Image (cartoon, rainbow, N blue to C red; front, side):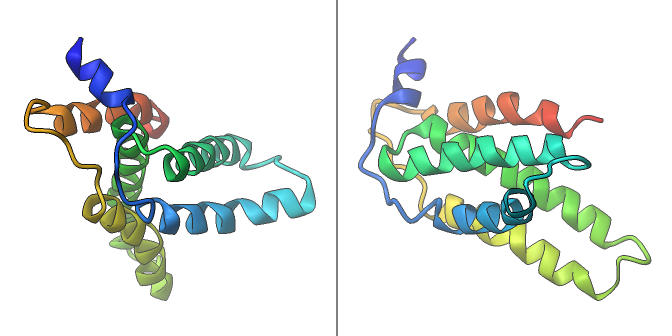
Length: 140
């Protein structure tokens, strides 16, 4: 029960952790909002909008769960993008695509929320909770 409380407790953390994620998500959602159509990529747009909301909340009130969800999402996106980028035919766009998802993941790792000595394992629990929330989105 203590781990659940630790996930939702507000923490003195850097609010810079989600700034690159906010930028990437805003850029990815801007064509959908500009045209007002979400036809082919409606699932991806909904996921990105939900993640954008989580990142906005994280910049105002940092928590371990709010950190774990974007970290899991960008980590899985990085792995998927690298896997796709290594395929033949992806071309010269691979480094840009990898950088767009790798930079937010690195910022999230570098500016992670700090835990108390009594909260041993809370960061691992936050990453696991983030994976439980995010991993089903990557299963097709």
